[in-house]
Length: 100
Image (cartoon, rainbow, N blue to C red):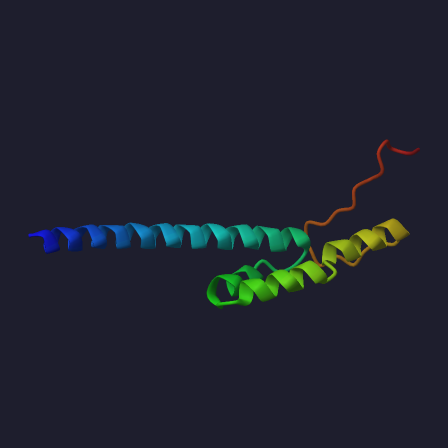
C-alpha cells in the first residue's frame, strides 16, 4: 500500500513540476523575444536560447558585447543623418519643444 501511495505522489509531483517548467520556458522565450526586438535584433533569436543548450550563455555574451542596431540608429540620429531603418515602425521623434 505504501509503495502505491509514494508512486502516486511522485507521479503528481513530476506532472506538476513538468508543467511548471514548461510554463517558465514559455515565459522566458516570450520575454527574450521582446528584449531582442526592442534592441533591434530578430526576435527569433529567443528560440535559439530556448532550444539549444548553452546557447543562452553564448547569446548573453554576444548580446552584451556587440553594438545593437538601435545604438547605430541613435548615433546616426545624433549626427543629423537619417538612419536606414529596417524596422517598419521606426519614426524619428521630433525635437521638443517644437522649434519654429
